[in-house]
Amino acid sequence: MAQINNEKIAVIGGGVIGLCTAYQLQKKGYCVTIFDGSGVANGASFGNAGHFATEQVFPLANPALLGQLPKMLVDPFGPFKIRANYFFKALPWFCRFMLAMRPSQINKNTAAIRALNERSMAQWSELLTEIGAQQYLTQQGSLLTYEKDNTEQLEQDYRHYLSEGIAVEKLSSSQVLALEPCLSNKVSGALYFTRVGHTVSPEELCQKIYQAFTKLGGKMIAKNIDSISNNNNPLTIETSDNSYTVDKLVVCAGAHSKELTRQLGYKVPLEVERGYHLMLPVDVKLNRPIASADRKFIMTPMKGGLRLVGTVEFGGLYNEPNYRCSEMMLTHAKALLPELKDISLCQLNEQSRWMGFRPSLPDSLPIIDCSKHNANVFFNFGHQHLGLTWGAISGELMSQLIAGQTNTVDLTPYRVNRF
Image (cartoon, rainbow, N blue to C red; front, side, top):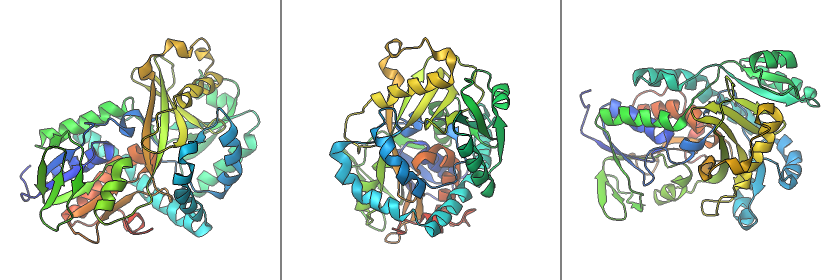
């Protein structure tokens, strides 16, 4: 494609958000370079659940969560952890999180999440068709299961999702087993989200986008950014051994975006949610992601086995991983999949356990915006649990913003100075 100009754009971050952003900009004719010292998709974009979770329209800040937190914190198999040495560092974020629980704020944030979700699957389908990677999107829906004593919660959740226009069906135990015969009869029912999808390999999906980006002439520099000058034009990026000048810059560095954004004049309340997975090298005949309302984790059939994903741990960027958070998910998986009964942790290698960083803001919304201090600086980060889901639509919106085109989604709720 002929270039519309010779503007050089730096995209900082090689995860799914950065890759989709870089691809869309390169396609529009800009000269784009990705900067990431870890290379392509070596963070949360590698180890996520592979779930395009368009049913998740509700912000995480919900008053109902407050009554559940004490039990979650003391339960050794619970989904929520706070490292003792990080408790006070996380307090300011939790204060903002609680403010986001006000009913008016919940309604606004739900609408803003839904606006991205409603366009995300079509955008993914368009992008993957364009680059010849349709096989990395499977659209067979997902299940949210409920066990024997939780039928009242199932009914309540069903009505809640319906009220937001989510395509959902309520299934009995026999209907669940007809869809997924491998599941345990402990499952008394499920919600079937019919318009969501999954990928068999988040990592390979990202690699396909990167290959399409480089085929268009895009480049990657495998260096971390030490500092950014906030001059109007050109911008200067400093790495450990070189400096680069660019015309425009987009921060897509996920959980590492906070410091870069501070250098560019903004203090954003970005916190790190450490997520874990356990990869089981087994061929379980599941057709779609299976989440558990009771156990707060998700299982996704993937290339190379079954991925178990869950746990929210607040511990920052520098604490060592606690791989017991990965290992405890095997107990939950065995409860739902009887055929896993003979699998033990000692059969798994070190690569089966993984921890990554989710970049989360208190209102569960990302930042997709242009700097008000510098018209050449842009932000595209903070996608919390929905980075994969929002990858394609976020990249498209950012490319529209930079090109001066009308955005297909109103970006007001995602502005950088909303806090």
